[in-house]
Length: 343
Figure 1: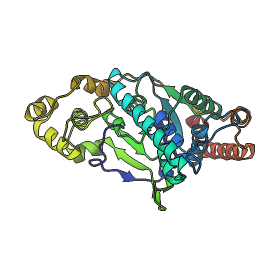
Figure 2 (figure 1 turned 180 degrees about the vertical axis):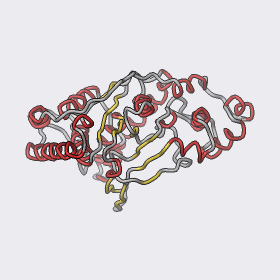
Figure 3 (figure 1 turned 120 degrees about the horizontal axis):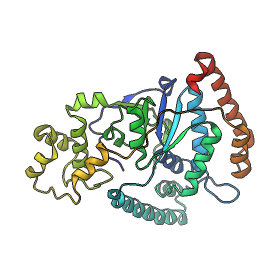
Figure 4 (figure 1 turned 120 degrees about the vertical axis):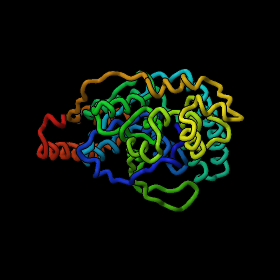
């Protein structure tokens, strides 16, 4: 879910090419869920290998990573660790929604409503442990670094961007801003031509850039106030927020009363089920792993081919073609800049 700031935040459309030469910390779980949802057959079934194991996430991870490396972007993927205890309610809510979607998916299949079935199937996506491990294995073969966060992946990505280990954090959610990411890139995994659900209409989805300094200037708030605003609306750690308060109202209240301590007494229905100070701490003092540097390497073509083609039934011809493109891109990068600046 994440905090719903879309009505308040100015998003600047950009091109993938404009990110060339920049390193991006990608919220791995966020983008893998996108691949699991989008990469499906006409009836909503995911890609599978000869053993019946889901491979939609691997397909998206491999082909998308090659595409962005070819453009000149240096990706690093950040994986979630143990979620904060306060996230348990939201996790249970998501699981219940997936179970409900699974029932509707089966019902739609039985009556032959394939388009409807596909929409429900997308909502059933589950990222299992073996999928995470396979993703890390593939990235290692590709020479792309990955980081295991101690807790929230978005917090780790934001920390890396703050420390200037990377230029920006990438996620669909806006939580990265509350965690302090100076720049947020959205739509990195789904940019391009996309079909609208239940409509025979295609739209072009462009990457978007949000700069935290501009958010502060446009909204007239500080980082601490942005966190308080998010808590009023609802976060993964208090999904319901405060009844009747949306983004615009939350902003008005925070600007008028400055902080939650002053806002809460003014509300008729401000019964927080958890201490909002605990939520503040998650965003303002998150658990992160200290990192000094990141290292990119050349792809191990033999390893990639063995893993994707021999183990997971990918087309050898297609994988070899993509690996050649990746190698060519890295050679071109070497000519433009000092070798050590890339690897």
